[in-house]
Image (cartoon, rainbow, N blue to C red):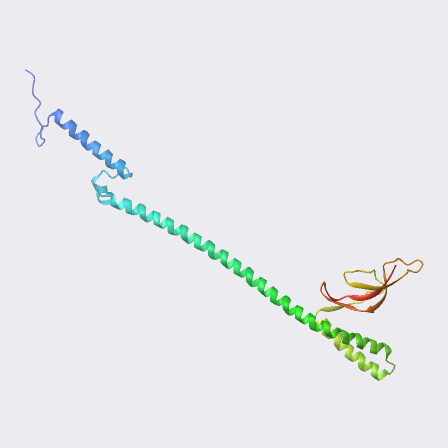
Length: 210
């Protein structure tokens, strides 16, 4: 007769054919839990409190992460729009300042343009004056007038004996060039011109050789 295997003390004897199916079922449930949760570690009892039977904490955490990502994207979009708006406002402010400055300078130029004939008359009076005392008085007034123009950045255009430049001069008369003289030069200036920078306030009226 074959000897029967006696159970170890403290351990219940289970038939081999009954223990095997329970172990397989347990392993199957463990793997199913791991696959459903996605952590690979939710099968153990120590992880069940974190993951839960319905995986509520995992779902809440994923939801919070998605909400955080959406909030970050929205904040980045608001920041980009704010920076664009700030840049557009700064450009608008600069354009507005330049427009006001140009309008101010143009207004001053219009006023100065109206007083330029005063300087013309002072120069004519100085050229025809014979009395020395009167001449000194006219020179003093003329110097004050010229200083005013300098302070405003206005320069005289007096191109006598220079090459004619239509950008600053207006030819109202012409005469044939003398022998040995190149044509296209300013022979005489009837009325001086004035400019501020490269902007002409009044063109010089001249006679040009042809």
